[in-house]
Image 1 (cartoon, rainbow, N blue to C red):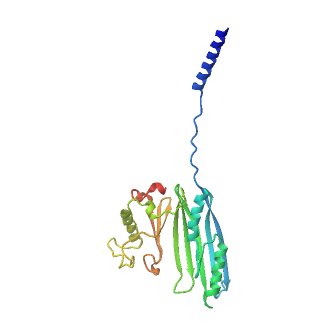
Image 2 (tube, rainbow, N blue to C red):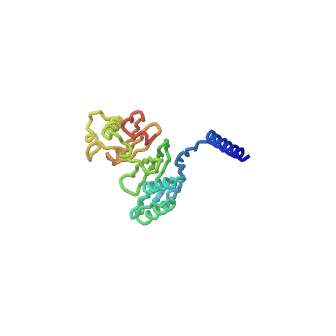
Image 3 (tube, one colour):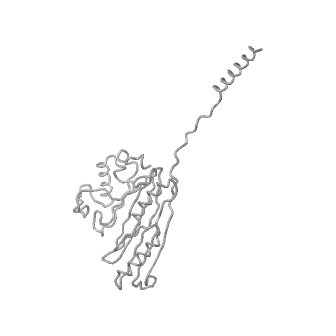
Length: 264
């Protein structure tokens, strides 16, 4: 009897061991990293002071603002984007720079500056419009178009193009994405000459461009799903009267010149 009970015990252990070795154990699932769940929200306002609404358009001040801010997760990504947007959406004034996230405060400050500094017959205008333009798998692209007039020979207008990396929210710079800066600059110069209807061997300086030296890349670019959009603002490389120069370089032409894995 004692021998039989030992036999049953060992048989049961063997059975349990066999089941453990042959059971269908579900493999552990690898949890994918969560992409940034970021979206952009607008804060807008419009304010006038004086005779802006009359047919004679008497002395007045007018300001129109549409600002964008990032919201969502990770919060560190949203915060880094917003830190950059706060700089580019800041309203320049005579004695300060307003960078609050409240567009109404910007507008109020502009009107106060007009009341303090404008001459009796002057009209001031300021407009800053931020637009969410494009998104790729790797980048969010935003533009900020600014128009201002506070007296002088002509108004000023310029555009800021911003490309934010989705992985961490930082604003991409040329040094982040270029593989071959010399060849890329040569490609951009070809597009520039075509846009300005300049011959391949035409002297850029004599044409009124790049008076500070040789050809240089623009300060502003962003990422389009099909390529790169670049812009030279007035006064960046030429007199104001020449206006801006917008360029688009197709994605197919960028292979080997830029880090495409960071952009698309």
